[in-house]
Image: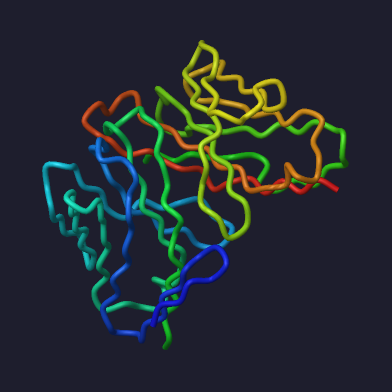
Length: 113
Length: 118
């Protein structure tokens, strides 16, 4: 289930189940969205990105969905594995490339073996 | 490819001293480098944008005289925390975009530097 802690909400899932991590972004003018995975004490690791002219994009075991109407982004992870345990951040920018990213609050994914 | 390194990976310093953190793009030339700060259990917050050979652009609320950024080459940017205080203790992360890959939007992140001020 999902719980909201003082700073980071946590999502706990059973190994092998699918995970859905949600994000509400702030700027309706944002054109580029990215999901990052961050393990403890490490920098963010790119997972998947999507432009605003798309509503879905698939990668290996991951899918990103974009709903511009309600400014919502989600990350779906299929067949979640223990190695997927980490904090996941969505990020947005006005244009892709050399522009700063605005990060969402993050969700901690905990995979129960 | 597209590896970004940071040095040191962690540092402990005394209050009032200055600390320099390096961010290097190892196998590409970085058009732009960004510096972020992350407090425990919180998200990354942009501090400044750094372009080679020009002054950094700081985000609102970030003191440019306290957080000195130098971007002297296309592969190196440094962040100096001057007169550090315990409230500056944080995880500092840099990212870079690849000058040679105009079709790539990805920002490549370094591994971060843990600063603890005692």
